[in-house]
Image 1 (cartoon, one colour):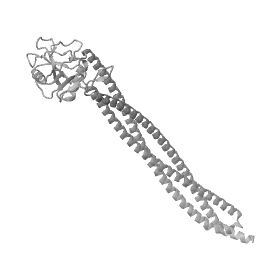
Image 2 (image 1 turned 90 degrees about the vertical axis):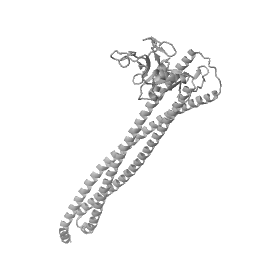
Image 3 (image 1 turned 180 degrees about the vertical axis):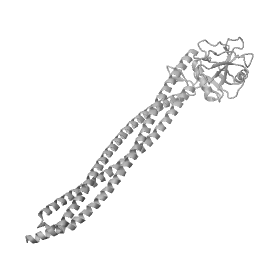
Image 4 (image 1 turned 135 degrees about the vertical axis):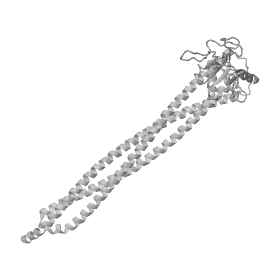
Length: 429
């Protein structure tokens, strides 16, 4: 019986050796594939962790942006309430006849307070614009982060696809290995009684093969989990993009509301200025069509060009006269409004003249130009205005105008009274 077993073992020994070598090679390939899958899985896990961290950062930035928009909304609400109170108060005062016997000094003091309030409101509006600029920058950075997140997700999907292909190849190898193991199971059973060593080696190989199968199954589960996490991250990224778009729209609407409230507030102070600081009473004034009200006077900024004398006659026909600048605020108002009405024609006649006595500049109402209230243009080379230039007209330059191409407090010039410029008319309300 021993001789028979020895004969059978000798006959099957080459086949067993070849099968064993084949199983060892396939086991080595499976081990290498498993190692590579572990490395790819680790890289995939690291990438997924980084994407989740970026998503958390985007969520925090989105929360901060929501908080800033809430602050803006609260500020808009306060401005809207203030404007509503002012409008209600103005409507209550309509129809009332107020006493116009207030002194000029009181009006000037009230107008100065009004200008300070206007400057404060402009500063607040600038702060709001700066905050909006920062918010817009945050929104743009968040959009860039979202784009980067999409690229990361796309790369992660590609890696998952490659991992799925590798898993498919590994599955095919496992199926082939199982089929070959099944073919050799009969031979292993026949040799089991006679070839204990060969049986032990085969059992070890089967055990290792089973371990590889279990590891492959575990990798499949991990891959499925990563795929689901990627899908959730894509949904979160889309939700963040939708929130960003909605926040941009809300921000634009808030800015529009702020601008409208600011315009309403300016219109209220312009047409219904406060005449009593203690009671906060307002006096609503009116000017003719195409005239602009400022403080207690009406102004007309002409679009056609006339000589200085013709411009004055036109103003007088409207019950007015050429502009007499009585304060720095009035100078700024006249300069800025002239610039906004017509930016191409920069020179505008005002009520200045030294036609009676050369160098003795007076206003059209006969009052002299105050030394502390002059805005003559000065040049770097020392050729300051007025210069009574006679190159074009030998009679010189006896009429005054302002030029909006210079600074508002450095814009007066003398010119020939026969030159045609635009003009500014002025009259009381």
